[in-house]
Image 1 (tube, rainbow, N blue to C red):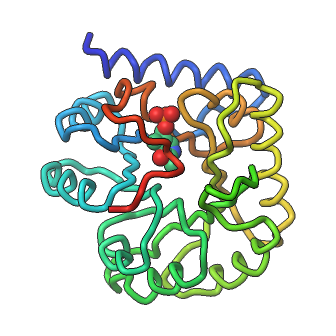
Image 2 (tube, rainbow, N blue to C red; image 1 turned 120 degrees about the vertical axis):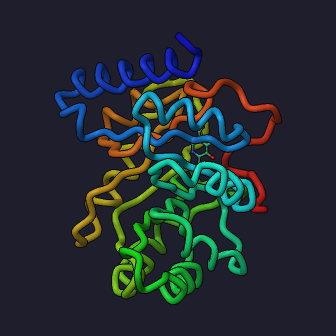
Amino acid sequence: MSTIHDNIAKVRTRIREAAQASGRDPQAVQLLAVSKTKPAHALREAFACGQRDFGENYLQEALAKQAELADLDLVWHFIGPIQSNKTKPLAEHFAWVHSVDRLKIAERLSAQRPAHLAPLNICLQVNVSGEASKSGCNPDELPALAAAVAALPNLRLRGLMAIPEPTAEVAAQRAAFARLRQLQESLSLPLDTLSMGMSDDLEAAIAEGASWVRIGSALFGARDYPQKASESPAR
Ligand SMILES: *Cc1c(COP(=O)(O)O)cnc(C)c1O
């Protein structure tokens, strides 16, 4: 068995066990394979194991892989920081954007979404840890932002996303994910998505209601550069 094949099996088992431990249906938790910095052949290998949804952080890198993998029926998610002058290719080439944190970006995505495509699925990224350096909207700004984004025509607001401050303490992991869930519940909108949990904290995220877990290194191995997920520049 290849490493990726093996890793996918292990991550699927972790997801299933975490869901069962909190009395959730394992089918309600979807696996987003985060493939940033990984070559197209690694995604092809994951596809052969049944993986369809892939998350990328860097636009140019993602577009190059989409071209290389055009023969596969993949669902592309953008999960990285967004520059407002880069929204058009996002609107044209992705099914989901998890990292919208301001109205200007959402307005541009809606205006630039091609008419022949289904509405672009959107998660609003929220800063649940309160560190100045992190992206994501402030929780105070969320109700107004969510209402405005929900009203845009070519987008479908699905839910919230967060990248909490990393911590090894499960109680602290759960508190941050619970905060995102509670913020979602406090919005009176028909939302069905909580994008939360990565390789090191997916169990805590699933216990608090994650519907997408975004998993990179546990599937594809360590990345080749020491960037922090939340601080990667858009390119
Ligand atoms: C890189 C990244 C991930 C995956 O992180 P791992 O710890 O490798 O699983 C998830 N979400 C976002 C937004 C990322 O940038």
